[in-house]
Image 1: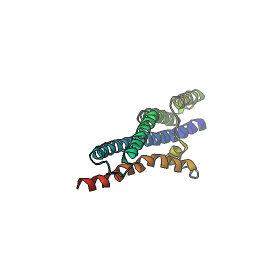
Image 2: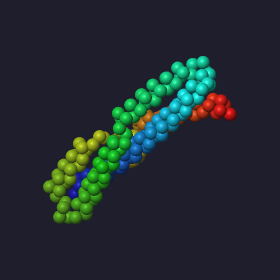
Image 3: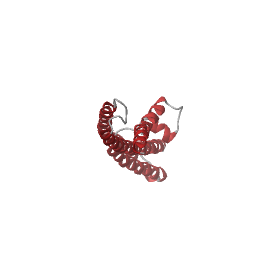
Image 4: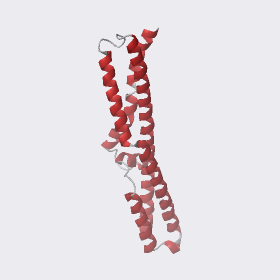
Amino acid sequence: MELLELLEQRSYATYKARLRASKRLMTRNNAWNASLIATATSTTIASVALLANDGIYGPNGDTLFVCLAVLSLTASLVTSGLNYSGRSRDMFSNYRRIQRLSAEAERAKRTPSMQNFATVAELNAKYDELLDGSENHTEADYFHANGEGSKPASVRRESLLSFFPYISLIIPLLLLPPLLCWMF
């Protein structure tokens, strides 16, 4: 039955995109956690050094650290609000249920007694319910998972958003040389 095959293909493509979304969200969660831990640790150590030598980070070192503290606080509040870990877990649960639905559609497609309008309607209703019960994956997730069509601009934007926590690791690295020079 053609409708059953279409549902199987659509649900499988959705499953792969949601799997990709779950991995993207977990990777972002881990990257932001690493960045925030590194920044908090390095700024705390550097602030202690600044107490011992107020010129270690230049004449405006104290102002620099207040600004870094505000940036760190802002980043932690934003990433907490984005709830990457919880969203990843929810996406994982959703893609596993869609995977089961896709397998169910595949079995129905191969079982002649299940190839009827009632089965297709029931599976479609389950699919729609699963879509409604979760946030959607991004266009970039779909592209990475299924590779269909030309590369959308959202892929570059998603890559930049995922790379940003790694870029922010520059802050702890820049704080290290003056500290090491002062210590040794």
